[in-house]
Length: 325
Image (cartoon, rainbow, N blue to C red; front, side, top):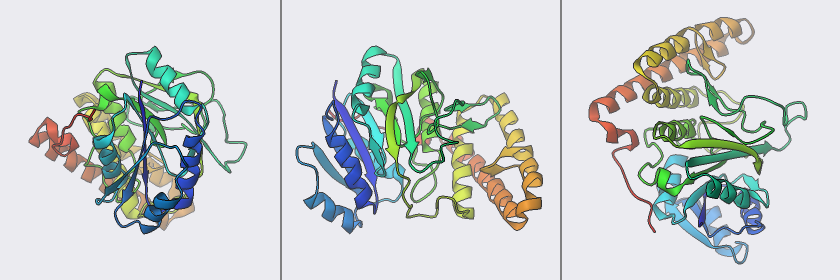
């Protein structure tokens, strides 16, 4: 089995250095490492010309369009592995990462995607590694992540996380990441769209906490800043979530989801109940978060409806390709 690792990167040369060093220390060496770099990112290009760990089978690819989706799709175009593994430039896979990934895919021919824990550095001990629900979509439309907290045995899930996810080549050969995802950098919920699409195709998704990367969350260079509210970033994230869920759900579930989104919502996409809950403490900020979420919901509905009218290929911008090899 041939394993390809794809790393999208932008303006994080020091983080990328740590990531590549970790890949060079894998007990099961990667057959191919593809680093996708923005064409304007001079510092990263200079680093890749001078400081790559020796012996790493590295290929560098340039991308012009902003956003992680464009970068990952450029990597997919070049990938030749039987399993395509993704991690972020600010992560460092553990030495047995690829070996465990290979074991899972060899053992289960119905496995389409595999995820693992991203152990966030500097996370308070009270939050690290506790029993919790991981990677599930509730029936009314609330996605649950918690991939950084999972413990215990491997189990089937609905959703993977971008910092630590791998896919069988045949599962994604004609399904690039959804180019309708909005944002110029992180493009929140692109994993949700891909995960639910693979589930609809009949593939199993599994989360194994032992498939582990250390995650050093680095600053983002777009509107979606960590721990800082941005109306544009919130609209984009809610748009992406809404689009992915409307495409996954049946008509009855769509109606239930839209009622939930309007009346309740969750902490990252306020509905009326969340607005009432937070407005006494946050006042204007709560109103701004609610307004951004409602705009994102409406925009997601509009994108879904327009794509539905255009036909099935619209889900990935009208593109299909098979991975080369």
